[in-house]
Length: 429
Ligand code: NIG
Ligand code: FE
Image 1 (cartoon, rainbow, N blue to C red):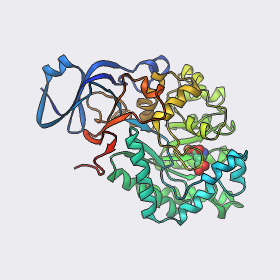
Image 2: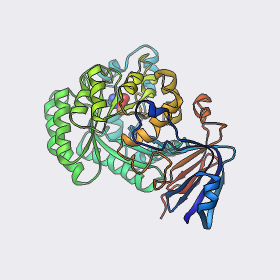
Image 3: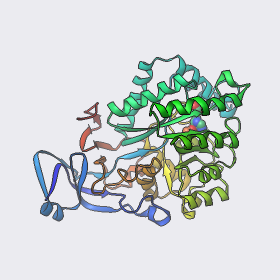
Image 4: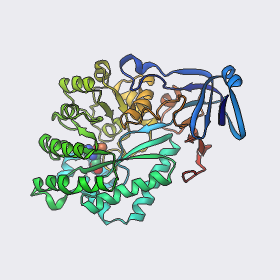
């Protein structure tokens, strides 16, 4: 018999996203939908998913088993936000208004604002304040259905400040229901004190930052912002190759503002993901498909920067690239924690179909942080991470946009959000 200590009964629809991971091409249209579906978990892992008949035959409820009636709701896998800049000090609403007046993101950066202004504010902030603010952001994410997120450092830019940011996201991973995957992004921009000696900063990243982060076991991934005005292709290659030698998995901010060969580099180095990709070349698309590198698309930042240009998602899907979605949550280009809104933008602005966008925000996004074997879909043995939305069918998650439909969140088999409110702040024994 299968055991259960949590049961979700009689959901209008269970969107499982089951099957091969990542989903490619036409597979992205398959949500593995079960109508009148039942889901059970035991000790944090999914123990049953299917119809009522099988449930009644196979599953025994443990004493104290929690039963959630989902007859008015749709169940989906917990959303996976595979690209965020979670921990930072200060905010940039003044730049937002400057941009409304017509000043571009790059112009603001050149005049000392942009990433550098957040670096200053982050360095000046205490551990406790950074922790408190990042926790609050995770709370928003959780209420909006995110159960796993990636978090990049990158606003510290000294060894100590970068380690501080990674310690904070690690502490949050341990103390908040959301699973947080750490990425070291010391190569986010050149810190003010190195503006006239950029090569020295690259050398320092390689000789000091990366080994320290590795030694302290603080990040699984290493990322670089490869862009004109940030790190060149050659600098990016040198940093990522050193990271790989130390055992980091690789990511790359690639082809965001210009076509710089970033996607090709990510594929050549066997990165797990290449992110942004607004200006990806045809060759870049081919290479990502060939190597199975996830393309993490971040329509929220295009929208917020009013770029009128989005990554060629349709061409990537057709070419067989594993396409994923994430918020890019950060104070400059995407001050928004919402994966559901990201999904809606992906449909409206990049022409994804709802089914493709949901797979991109769950199982394919899990693939982009190499967690697709343990989460991202509702399948036996995977983590019991679900969201229960008060909607008549899954299309309403996207079509009825800009509000929060998430009623209940289950993380590792425990109810952490009930009626839209967080009821369990900490992790569980
Ligand atoms: O992903 N591209 C680089 N980094 C961020 C923006 C960071 C900022 O403006 O603070 C991004 O868009
Ligand atoms: Fe980013």
